[in-house]
Length: 436
Picture (cartoon, rainbow, N blue to C red):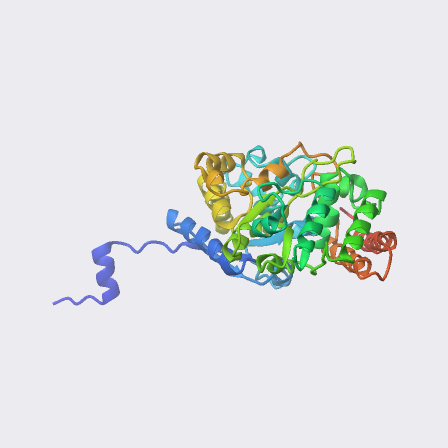
C-alpha cells in the first residue's frame, strides 16, 4: 500500500499549491480610527486579487515615519511605500536616488495614471515643473471653521450662520465670551492655519520663487503688513480670551469638543472625530478672511500626506505598488475613504460620486473643505508651498508666534524673526543640495 504524507495528499487533491503573493511593505503614520481605515484599504485590495499583499506598518507620527524610512534605506531594509506629510515634499525631492517618481512607476508598469483626474490644488503640491506627479496623493485636508450651535443660541447668535470674515468672527466670539464661554475661538496648527492658509486665502506669497516651486534660492517674505495686522488682532483678542491660543498641532481640538471654545478652526480631516466626540450640534463654515483685502477668498491649501515609492526593492514589488495605486484611484475607493475619514476626495470622480450618493445632503459641512479648496483656480501664491526643511521652519514660525501671543515681543518683531530664522534654514538646505 502506498502512503501519502499530508502535504503530498493536499497537493494530490488540490493540485499544485498556489504561488505566494508578493508582500509589499507600506509604512504609515495613521493611528487610532485612521489606522483602522488604512488597514481596511489594504485588506480590501488584498482581497481583490491574489498576486500581491500590501502590509501596512504604523511607524509613529509623520516625522518618526519618514525618519525611520531614511535610516532603513541606509541599511537596505526600506519599505516600498512610505507616507510623508506635505511639507516634507522638497526634502523628498532632494533625495533623488532614493525615490521612484510615481508617474515613472505607473508608466513603467503600464498602469493608467492621469494627473488631470486629481484636483489641481492637490496635484500642484506633489508635481514637478512639467506637471508630473512625483508621489501618490493620499490623505489631504484643509482647514475649515467649526462652531458650537448650542453656544451660539445661548449667546443670541444665529446658529445657522457661520462667521465669514475676521471682523464677524471677532464680534461673534465677543458675544460668546459675554454669554459665559471660556474662550471665544481657538485654532489648531498655528502656522498652517494662521500663516500658510491665511496667506493663500488672501492670495499673498509665503516666499519668493512661487513659494519655493521656482527654486531652492527662495526667501521667506510673509512678514508683510497684512500678516502683521492679523497677528496683532489675535494678540489683542488674546487679552480677553476672545481668541485663546491652545498650543501646537491638534491641542486645541479637545477644547472645542468639550464646549470650552465656541468657535474652532481646524483640519477638515478631523470632522468625523469632532462629530463623534462633541455633545452638541456642530456648525461648519469656511475659514475667515479680511474683507478689505483685494483677492481675498482665493483658495485654501492642503495639509495631510502623500505616498512616496522608494527605490531598490525587488522588481515584482513595483508591479504590485502600481496595481495598488490604480486601486486607490478608483472613484468608489476614494469616495469611501473620504466619507469614512473626513479627508478630502482627491479626484473629481470621487467628489461627484459622493455627491450623487447623497452624502453631503445627509452630512452638513462635509463638502465645505472641497468647496473652499476649489473656490478659485490656484495662483502662484495659493497652489502650495515647496520649501526645504519646512518642517523645521514651521516650528520656528510657531515659536515666534507664541512669543507674540504671550506678549513677550511685538507681532512685527515675531514675524521678522521667524522670517530671518527660517531663511537661515533655507540657505542651509540649499547648500546641502547644490545639484538640485
